[in-house]
Length: 218
Image 1 (cartoon, rainbow, N blue to C red):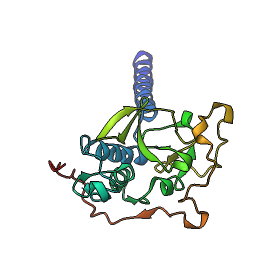
Image 2 (image 1 turned 30 degrees about the vertical axis):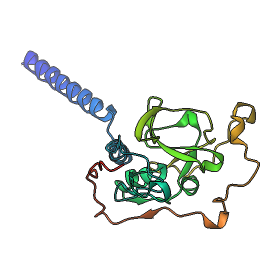
Image 3 (image 1 turned 180 degrees about the vertical axis):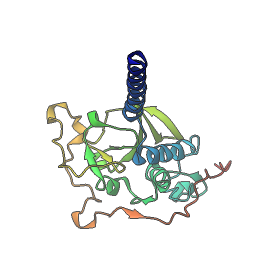
């Protein structure tokens, strides 16, 4: 009888141990959070447009469009147009210029960069913007939408985080001795009027999520 009782107790402890380990393993596993899943959508939308030509003032939340000026016959994207399109997949409508985008979301230092953060170039981000992919890569608009290594030349001192942002104070910028000379503007950027900072807006969910057809018109 004592042997049976001891066997039952031992079996119970074994089963309990197995279940506890299984639950602990499940809890400690990396589960994607909502912002990570949304970030993946944003990244996929941007990458779906690789090869689309540059078009000045082209593109937006609905996809590539004809640009203006010399790009009036070219269907494609400029830098901020591509970012608008990518983040429309997350239900966010961003300002149309990179200079305005630089003043929404949470500013983070380059060493804190995370997939989905926005990388800016020029004084106050007024020259261009790209989407960080992780592993030192970004998707940007050159002659076409393309994946490139992240470059520090002319990079603004902060990145901007829109998804999974934390309400923290703006971090200290890197020491001036480490910043490229171009990062110290001598004149205020024309877009940077404090009273005109564009708020982050929500757009209807009916924004088309499918990639736009690639136009052959150049």
